[in-house]
Amino acid sequence: MTEIQRALIVILILATVFFAFSQRIAGLISDPNDLARRRNIGLILTLVVFLSANFWIYSLAVVVTITYTSRRESNPAALYLFLLLVIPVGFIPLPGIGSINYFFNFSNARLLALIVLFPAYISLRKKSDTVPFGRTWADKMFAAYLLLTVVLNMREDNLTDNMRVDFCLVLDIFLPYYVFSRSLKNMQSFRDAILSVELVIMVIALLSVFEASKSWLLYSEVSKALALTPGSGYLGRDGILRAIVTTGQAISLGYLMAIGVGLYLFIQRFIVSKFIRRAGFALIAAGLIAPLSRGPWLGVVVLTVIYFLMGPKSMRNLIRLALGAVLALSLVSALPGGERIINLLPFIGTTESGNLTYRQQLFTNATIVIQRNPWFGSIDYMKTPEMEEMRQGEGIIDIVNSYIQVALDAGLVGLSLFVGFFALIVSGIYRAMRSIHDKNSDEYLLGRVLLSTQLAILFMIFTVSSNFVVSIIYWPVAGLGMGYMLMVRKNVVQKQKGLASHESTYS
Image (tube, rainbow, N blue to C red; front, side):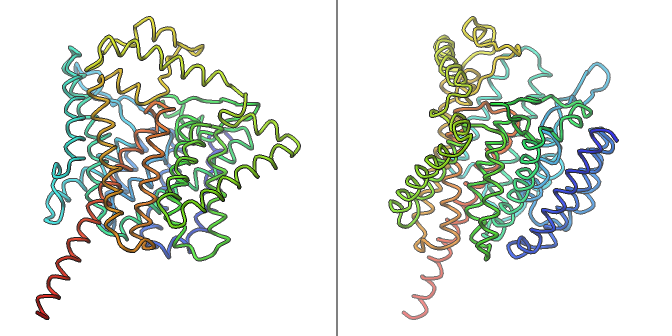
């Protein structure tokens, strides 16, 4: 039996056991038929990709299964999230014809954008209750950032390459943001979408714990067989394998788990059993630990603090959280091997402390490069002496800071548009929350979760480049924030009209 076959058996057993256990609970939150259909599609596609070890056969299976079931799918955003990480994140060239060597770099996310999100985009544009794109300030900032990116791509002389990049911007950024911001129009659609991604995150968390405990990357061989752009591969920290699963890098997995922690704070309200609620949280927490990525751990701290600040009895809960953290650190340090655990913690520990030095040096050197082309960046910044100095032993220059990456590519103008867009999303969520009178409502809780998760993402991308799963996730999450704003605004208007109608009846 090959390693790919053995990995398939492990994945199917763990995933099937999880779905069997969670089926009844999840079915109380969302339509059980929708959940069962998405689960079956995910398992079928997993079988196809492992048994064929061919990306194009897998792509054909995606087209066939989604086309066959599309009429029964009421929430394309939920389906997109559920299938996004079925296979490892990575790219493969789409072969061209004639003098064209290849059309563009293809991936599972881009395949799903074409098959799931694009039809949803066409459908949404035809609906009278869909808010047209560009009506909000966040939409305008988003459009300005995309337009600037398109214009700056023209610095390359190759027209074909420019067209490739522009087309991929639509698939990677515009379609996810638009569909997520316009298709989720009520609380049930939000519950369905968030539950879908949360179920996937929990399965990945289970697989990540297996990878770390068995020192075996389950998707490593199938990723090679698919000829996808490779991720980080086998990497350890303090003698422990850092899990990856399908996310491409250990830090990307930690980033995904941190988002899972945030979204679970919403889903857990609908789980009656206290034991199951805690078990679900423990599973995601274990998935957060498995990649041994410290940036996402800090991200969860930021997320938790903001979440409590936005809720009732905020100071009391924050004091309890701080005391609990101090007590936990004291207990861990007293346990056998506790010093090893403490050394893994950010700022406190000493394991691989050189990573912090690298980030500091990257910031210093990148600042020098940005100052040469401050407004719109440059296309050859990687060839500068300052960036060459950052080349690591693997022969790569790892720009482990998404803000620096944007500034190098698009200058301070591009960085301002990028940050400005997310700032408008955050402020819009906060304003929408303030318009809700019932602070214990599901609607207000959703705002707390989206606000804290979005701010945690903005913190975490300071420690990681927007590669692999990072940017694939933060554009849809921003779309969720915009969708929340539009939903709350619509509900407020409807309530005002209802009150006006009631008053006119009795006047």
